[in-house]
Length: 245
Image (cartoon, rainbow, N blue to C red; front, side, top):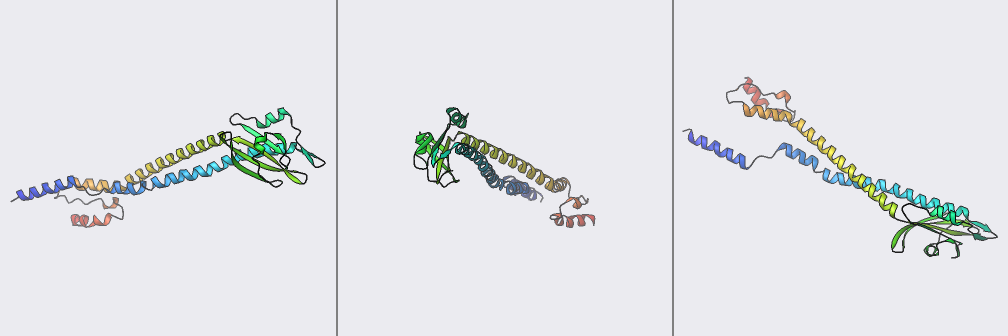
């Protein structure tokens, strides 16, 4: 009479072994960690663009400082501008350890006052005191160029300073690596915190589950309901009340 019951129990065990119910821990971790795959790359991209812009702006300001220094050398006598600059001063203004730097100064009427004549051909019209930044080709390479309109009489004398993009590319790589490192560190910290939070939150359920699996049908010991979270303690109260009665 008891043999069919044993076979039924074995059948239930086999079903449990082949098709387990979903894990609450796995579900919680999935819904906590899955958004990190979206939020962390977005945060890294945001950090990259926010940090890259001021880095590139500082390099543009360095170009502008050179252009202002050249404009300070400009002289105008009787409405005729000139650039009394020595070779030593020109080398000092264009010296750079990483990138090639070139300059050109015009008189506002397409005449070269000093510097590289090929660079002056890339000039654009500017107003006195105006600054214009451009990316221009230079002998098969790209250069960052600033055009400053230096006031000289009744017109603006274009002051052009350009340099290769080595420092800019280097700054972009460094900012990208820093943003990726910050994103990975953030993901690691949030992942560990999520794992610890889920483990600590499910600990009372795990202890109660172990207590239920170890007790016999004849046991009348009440379950530790006070240790359970409020959201799930209601299902254990009936059995505790029954056992206490």
